[in-house]
Amino acid sequence: MEAFVYNSLPTETSFRYLVLNPGLGDVPLSGSLRTDDINGAIDFDALSYVWGAPHQVSGIACDGRVVRLTASLRDALRRARLPDRPRHVWADQICINQVDLAERSQQVTLMARIYAKSNTTLVYLGRASEEEARNVASLVDEVNAIVNAHMGDSDSWDNVPQAKSTDPIASDGRWNAVAQLTRRPWFDRVWVVQEAGLSVKPQILYGDLTISWGSLFRALKWVQMRATAIAYNLHLDWHGIHMDRQEIWSCQKPPGTATTWSFLDILHASRQLQATEARDHLFAFLGHPAASHHATGQLIVVPDYTRDVTELHVELARKYIEWTQNLDILSFVQETGRLLPSWVPSWVAFDGSVLAQLGEAVFSAGGGPNVRAAPLFVDDGKKLRVRGVMVGEIQFLTEAFADTDFSWARTGPPGDEGDKWAGILAHVLDPTTPYLHVEQSRLVSCAVTLTAGLSQLVEKQLEIGIAAFVSPYLTHIRPRIGNNQLLHLSSLALESRDNTDNPLTEAAIAAPLINRRFVVTKNGRYGLAPVSARSGDEIWVLFGAKTPFVLRRAASSAKEYSLIGECFALGVMDGETAREYREGQLTEEALTII
Image 1 (spheres, rainbow, N blue to C red):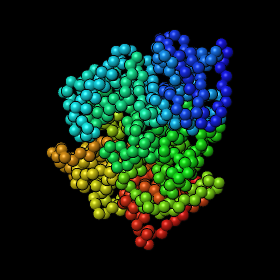
Image 2: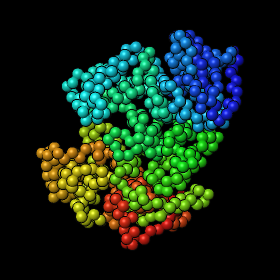
Image 3: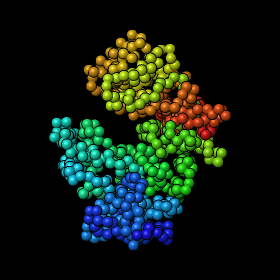
Image 4: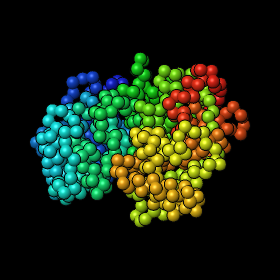
């Protein structure tokens, strides 16, 4: 048959859908493409799947012609079709003319409405054996029965008991099938977040079985909340952005939290996901309510596959700053994407945690939500002019910390990572080094900094906790600190062993510390700085941002800086600098970030 020829869509709200003819197994696919208006009352289901290898190895007979398909869409359509009657299906690969960039761009603006308007989203995870699928389905049903029996109508996980390691379900072999399901490529793709997120009632097609999305993720939530040993033992993992599907896309607060997912949170969480087209890291989330201006409805960027991806990143950052009049987006600048202006985050790769997220309800270094940044864009929008106060120049810094510096990434006893802890303590415990935080001990200030000020432990607990944490590295530390200091650390570590109520966990330190350096400024301020920070870089509090930033003076101008990244700086995270400025104790400076 001849290749199918797409006609132009008549209006901006037009879309195509496939009338998929009935069939079973490997019977060749056939159907008809129809055009309708998204505002109409059309009845259809949307398909969410992974494109996989781009090679078109199969086809579907449409209206006497053939539309070429990838193997993954062929399998998804075979699985989605009904045995005895036609099914109306929307699938992007066939319903959008993929070679027409103008149509692709225009249809992206409709995709959120398409998935929201569909009866359901059919999430096709791929082929699976009958045993694999039934193991998943039966275990999901059992876990949901446990949750429902204890939770009732309360919707509170506090009513659901913790699973013990001796409980039969904790060692159930069917968890291996669940682990295999969560490792399917679908969970790592960028577009699927919106596709499942906006669906009224998504269903999972796994092998020959259909599993309710709500049931699967309630079972995974049970593992997260009440059976973490299962996750650790099986390396059971899934991307957290799928867990809060309804809260994310409706802008509701997840249960037990004080904040909602912002547009920046979604873009950051999705940095770890995969996309064939870099622009899709932006376009895939334009259906979120926060992607449009609250008053005008204008999209933060208009999808256009002909535009340069760098220009799109710059436009998004500039619009966000103009709309919000704060500088929170600067906290999302990471090491990747340095071809961009230094104040513009790249959303296509992930370097690590964002302090402004970890301390979202706590940090207000730049003065809190009522302080406006008053930013100005200069040099045709390529440079950002802001106001702030310099609070220190980095003098001492350690090597950057990595996963391997913590026990979960080690396969043997503590090794060379002890040198990093030795370097920190040798500096911190040396009474001749600069020290600004005289209201508390050096060891406590060190512990507060390593946890980015987010630990709820009191000073004594922090001191004991950090001593216990570094105790495995005492052989590294011994040559670099005096005997008195070593004895004090050893005594505190022993005290920790006798008191189990002082849990300074690895997670509390790792979350802010991985991919950062412990730093000390010339005036003795402790902090955490990005990997690329170096001696001589400056720490600034910029008005209108939650966190301070490491800036580097440009060689060409004393008033221009490159933004290296956000940081934690002890003593300024609660708006102290902004208050001192308002009280006339400090003088602000205007600076330009290039």
